[in-house]
Length: 182
Image 1 (spheres, rainbow, N blue to C red):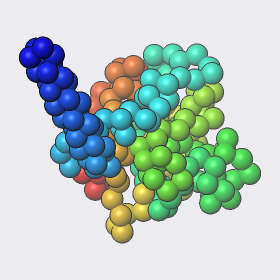
Image 2 (image 1 turned 30 degrees about the vertical axis):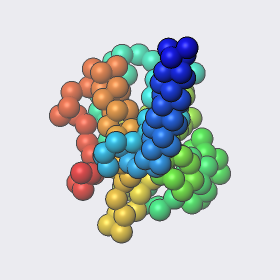
Image 3 (image 1 turned 180 degrees about the vertical axis):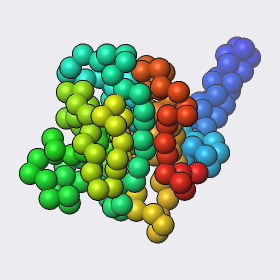
């Protein structure tokens, strides 16, 4: 009889401690990863980088030899909004391969692949970019100097670049970030 009473007390203490722990984790869940302990569910709610790398056309390992990360020069956006702001008739005309959203236009850290990536097409050099046809362009939604990329954008972009570099055997000397990236 005493064992049942003790088992009931232990079970009650366990349930209370688990409930308190869950509440604490949920309260910490809105912190950025660099802010310390946080709930991983808010980070893992994003699409996987592996899924973002998928394309409709075959990916040839020697197709790409360089990666360029640049800012959109907008405070908000996603593929559709960037195309509209640029005066393009369709999001398919956007001149990059990936867009990394902030919380204004898409989920913070969400990676969207464009039609250029889906079809494995080159970005077209223009007035603000003079890269080669073998450069993967990653657009990060941000308008410096008034703002900085979010922690999610930094971590997800770094992970995306690392995975692209590994998949296409691109050396770190051929990866270009904005001057004020960190």
